[in-house]
Image (tube, rainbow, N blue to C red; front, side, top):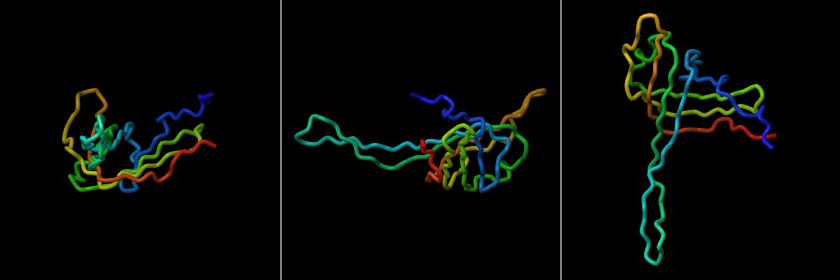
Amino acid sequence: MLDASKVILGTYGQVFIDGVWQTHINKLEASVEVEKRELNLCGSDWKVHKNGIKKGTGTMSGYKITSDMIKRGFTKFEILSKLDDPEAYGYEMVKLIRCSPDKIQLANWSAGEEVAEETAFTFEGYELVNPIAAN
């Protein structure tokens, strides 16, 4: 039976860009999509698939506190995602390699509201640095 206390909440997640903890980030999403080639083979009534190239995309968002993303421009950087929860079996760390922003937000604000900043990006590789394993 599932021990509900082991379900991980994102509350304790952390994002590091080039080793610097980004305390203002409150959401990170990253995924890899593989291009599959559809093949038709003689003697088979099933289509088969061959994996092709991969594409990594993601989005991070949080509160605007500095001009770091504007100053960084379109230079490449690394993101280290740490998903942690004190009640979990452990924590997971995934490194996103050669990240590059798709666009840079120069202004997006309204009077009386917190200023949010969202950055969509692509990446060119990943590494599972620390996996979570049930005890």
